[in-house]
Image 1 (cartoon, rainbow, N blue to C red):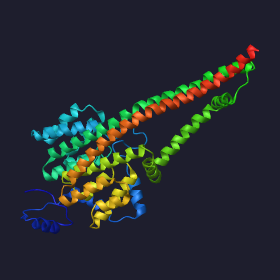
Image 2 (spheres, rainbow, N blue to C red; image 1 turned 135 degrees about the vertical axis):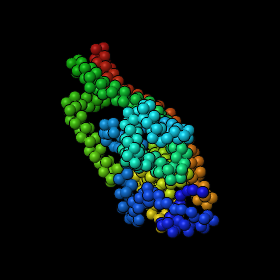
Image 3 (cartoon, rainbow, N blue to C red; image 1 turned 180 degrees about the vertical axis):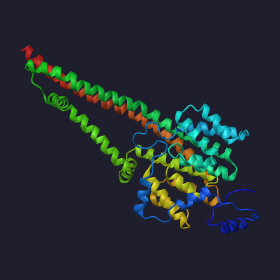
Image 4 (cartoon, one colour; image 1 turned 180 degrees about the horizontal axis):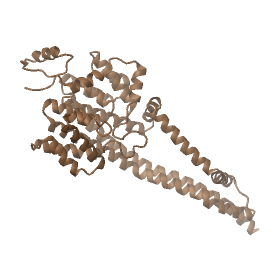
Length: 416
């Protein structure tokens, strides 16, 4: 038998294996995993937990700000690459040959450049996982650690098959969320443009005609006229203020404290906060389950997961759980203390810990939440569409009323 075991030393690893009834023939230190474990901090205060989580980058969505084409490779491209790579390895094609073939047929320029660098690293003597690790801006941590586990256990094709499943499901959920939000976003932008055009260009022409004819302007008309005059007079200040505000918010949300507060605020939003939390929990379950099923040690897996959940308060709860596990406790109670994870997730994880099938439980929970997110987002989209239409109709109706009311006054004077 061959495999990996998590232990503090070779002597401890041999003791664990003998306790399982195995005769130890040889032990080899998995240096990659050892380095990851040594990089993990031992204990952290509450402030350090928040700072550690706040410093994490948002997963899959890339870094905040402008990347100019140097961000992470897209989920769809990663899933396709992992699936093809696993198929070629399973067919007996050498790793370097497989990478060269996939590099030539890669549709993404970013993926093609990254794979070229990976192939060059392997030619210079690096392992596959080290070649991936050398490009943190291109390949996510889960791919690096899964590749390392596959190399250590001799199950590289199986690990990349699981990675393909993981990236494909992540991409499917992300696309559903984007598709559901596309229509409301387009309607909102068009509505803002139409209202701005009416207030700035259409309404003043009518108001001048009414004033010349001596029509008495009612309150709503005077209010819209004041808004129109302000926008026309100070449009450059409004644009400059909006740009400065966007830049200021961008810098603030890139800081650890600002990023943490923004994510905490998003979780408190009505309806949207629930979707965001379920998305983070789904990522937590799927990523952790995939890593554990491939033989990655729990603490290393959690260290990867905290960088992929996409929400810093949730990441802080995972960081706290790492410290509890390092102290010899289980994973469920620290997550329960955070009050962020749904009770169903915690109960399923508790059952998984007791039965030794926590990876299976986590993947089932991830599938459940992905379906739940799909239903919730569909309902949210159906609810937003009429609300936006009513809001836009109300604004346009108010402007039309402000135009019609002076007409009645003007016609009454003409009839006299």
